[in-house]
Length: 294
Ligand code: NAP
Image: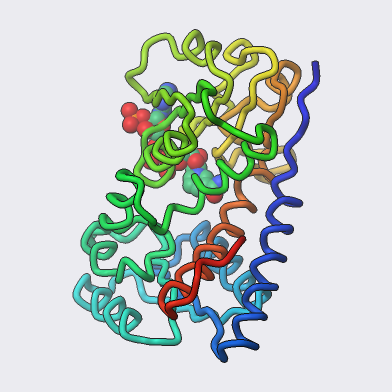
């Protein structure tokens, strides 16, 4: 069997087009543009690339984008002042502080300072709590993207056995909550899990979010299972160039899986499209409008 390749780029483009169309209608009907403010501290090259692409996509969706690049030595107090100013700015509906932050800054304090209504990353404890108890929340973009991708294979995830490998606050834990919300039966694995290959083989859906290049092998996957690869790992490639691989050994796993996301071109583009959708959702909620259907 050769797996169906889930085209995350095409699906993200589709979601992006829907977001752009709703944003255009919002502006025509209500006279405002959803606005996303992105804060970057220091000059981590990977963060710079992510932030630039988020800003470009925001503008291309017809939304307002502001970018705040701060020096690596900035104090926590100064960063908190900026977050408070963005909370108070009514042209800003979404605030994203790019992680990681330099060591003098406590990321939990910064996330807690963001107005939960503008927390488009879904990391604020209020949004984390609301997701856990099934109340409306802004939900982290990568897990949202994973669910959208899995739903292109399975119209319903109800009753399916889903394994999430990784338990980070950014990916694994919120993904497990979303899967529970979809009525899947969820197992969360981590670095202390015993017999991960055997456990993995018992699941219909496997989500890999470990940051361990090509860790998930062919014999971990039940024939026909759906595999969603969250990993982004930069590896040395031919001729001194680097290449990106996921947490799944794609070439061998695609021979046994029923469907699989590639890296790049799977979860990555969907994450950015979900950020646009979250910004739109936050803007509608702040304006007292119904949630957009995207
Ligand atoms: P993280 O915070 O480092 O968490 C990694 C998780 O994997 C931890 O829970 C860890 O277990 C678990 N783990 C590590 N080694 C393991 C092993 N050998 N067996 C089983 N579990 C293991 O990473 P993250 O932020 O969740 O990111 C995970 C991956 O997704 C990274 O490659 C990252 O670049 C990528 N990512 C992609 C996107 C996107 O947009 N596509 C977004 C975010 C992250 P313990 O808790 O026991 O340590």
